[in-house]
Length: 195
Image (tube, rainbow, N blue to C red; front, side, top):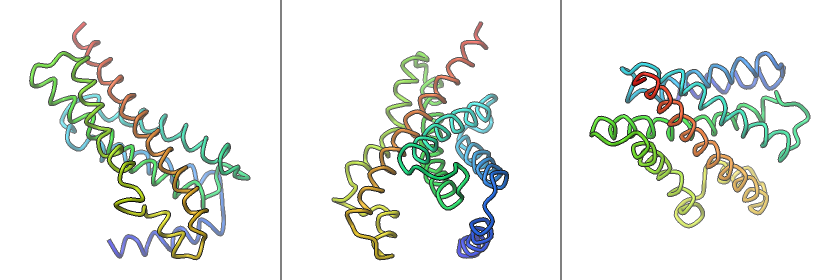
């Protein structure tokens, strides 16, 4: 872990000093593929899960990154690596977990004989439990990492809170949209295979 983090630190220094839309797009694409591969780990032996995970992650994270960068933070350019890479990392990580839980639960429910629509609903609810729990616990049980980092670096807690609210709202949105889209794609694929 320490070696990976130090290596990433040096890579980020180089990227931050020489911002490029191509490099930023390449890094986000790699993040997308790795997140999709990790997300389907519990159901990797089944066909069609990887493309669905790539589409679900790409659409949900892409939309919420656009909202964050252009409408909320009003970034000068979409490829600003200081903004794009950390936000993409947070959004991908949370959406990846939601998609993984949704896919695994959906497969389990179908395997247990549930109807596809009921399996989708159950899987979606299960995938959102960690997201809802983290919303309920934030501030009362734990201070989130981004907010803690900003406070430790000397930023006013009130400013740190505003950024954290944005992150929590976007993470909830990406996870919910990603899980819903993944389940919709899986249900569509299973209907096609039945037909």
